[in-house]
Image (tube, rainbow over all chains, first blue to last red; front, top):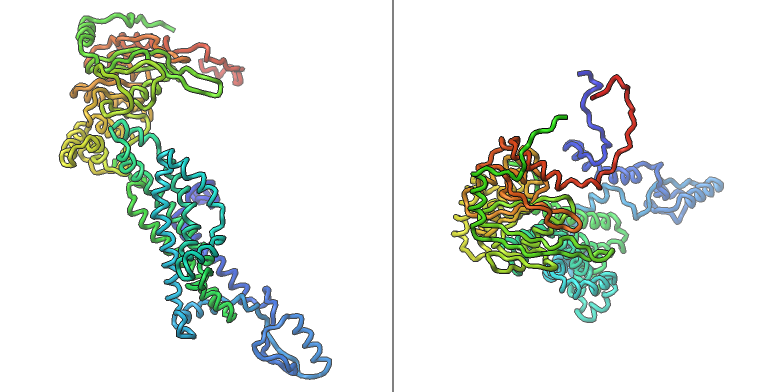
Length: 327
Length: 296
């Protein structure tokens, strides 16, 4: 076969899956690209770098090594020094303090776990993180405990649908943080109101999403069950629930992500705590590399938990995927 | 074109006639009395089915055929209890039925096996619903799976089976409940031609071996003639019984019979009944090729 006829699949083919190798490569690239852009802005002095970090104050008395000043002001001082024939200040291009370089964040990532808290009343980073995880867990857990059964009922019986969904439809438009003050008044200043905010942010969406998933169950399966003699409670427990489980699981994965997005607001309510407390504290000290590290940590926890759930789903619902027929 | 010299579809050999006489003497299982169905639509009330009446006798195989829109599916869904008739009644063993129940098994056109249950658990479903113990249901389910030849696959999930196998399991699942009648709504419609022929023979074999009456909906003329004792031919708008044909093809049936004179005569009659000239819109063809390339 001539080489020009070689069966090379095009990269851009509408709705064609990519080969495993290409897919892995692109996944890697999707993480690498933002890191590369970040690195470029951090390590290439001619890219952006609007500040100057002073290395030699020269004759300028108010400058000190390490001070960050605007490029324009630095230029002014240089010209001034030249005119007066005094020692020139020296410096190198630098980024504002709020954009730490990748390596600084990596170091911060490590030291954040190994540095003792400044005061005894303060928590280690992993303690803060764990506290955040428990807040999300309880908010999501309580929401799921009520929301999933209610959603399934709404999706199965018109009575529940008409009784609950209109109000929930209204309530879900109310921003969860708006209930912060109320939650504190009712539940105190510690974890109670935080869990409540996560609950409010998750629950109302959850009922509607689960109800919708339930309604999407193929009606033919229910009809088949009816002709086989299934009734009422059996239809619900033997057909509806097992039938929607895989999609329900997917819904919960997405909703868990939403619960996480309410975390930061929730933790600002009452006494600041958890990872949010860490972030605000570090931002106050202008330790932005720590802020970056903490934000990335939240992302990693989210991604990891989702990956674990996705693998679990594949295991649990093996009957769903259509790979390999045995006949 | 030569015309085949076909006998009338009404001609029956003595053997066939005897068979029908015996059949008509058997008990009536399903007695459909003037059922009709009206739907509300934006254009007002639409009569989908108008006063259809017929009976099926014990162990009879009845096919229902008709042009599209004649309400075949609506009819069978009413018999299954999945839709409520607007008028008339359905009697099973002389007792009126309302709502779905395990006394009328149903096999659907789409695949309706529960994807989360194995073949065995699917067949056990109805048995468990009727309150059988798990052990009891399991051994019974095994017998039915064996009957449709899928013992090797009893622990497979539906997604691992071919279309034909899925429908075999669906048949086993419906039969496991020991229904009085098996309602089949174009069950082989989604299968390829070879599988379909095989499934038809399989179905006849099953029917021969167990005590079951079958009502089978199809739009495939060959399928109807091959399977049925009698064919209920419907017409559309509204759906009404056009004619009931006693199929003159003798039993036992085999695919070779599809080219016998009585088979073809029946098919010709069905084609006459189902063909609707008013639906033919002529095409506007002009010759767009060289005359020397004529294909005639």
